[in-house]
Length: 107
Length: 119
Image 1 (tube, rainbow over the protein chains, first blue to last red):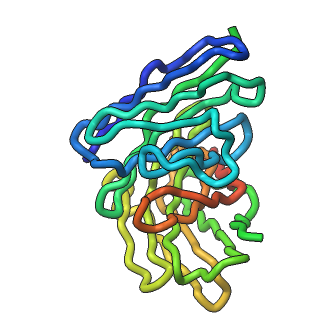
Image 2 (cartoon, rainbow over the protein chains, first blue to last red):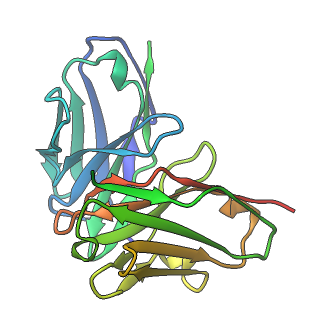
């Protein structure tokens, strides 16, 4: 099975900061990677698919990059609404795996 | 609008079974797959399995093989997830999510169903 490792597990940042979260796959997944945002008590929300495609309606301050085994999610200028937990997810042959999550906290 | 609406919270005893439903609306049900994802209290997301609403093909996470069954009823645009031989560590919020297709991303999620396993 493909394992996904996110770093860091927790990130403390201030409004306006540039934030980067990394996700590593245990083997190449090409660009089959998505990023989700989850707030307490809510279902996850799709932000990025196919590693770098922005989901409709998602603010442009969110961006994704990478291919193969190394991926990043960047928030260019952190907003109050962005404090949440972020998950990466890989897709391979009708099998999916999530990273363990990165909690973005207020500094 | 496009949405997935799940059944309500359940409380079960260890060893029992639970069946959670997920009713789709606002799109052609058979054009997409449905995955089930669970989240134990304070923990991350765990993919449980996938079903094609087109032909009923399934793929389950290895750790749940033999305990989970996913089905669909195309006449009511509803997907079901049944988990058997429940244990305390099955206590979690269970989500259904629409699989967009080739990209593998889950673009629509249900609201979640809390399943509590307790004696």
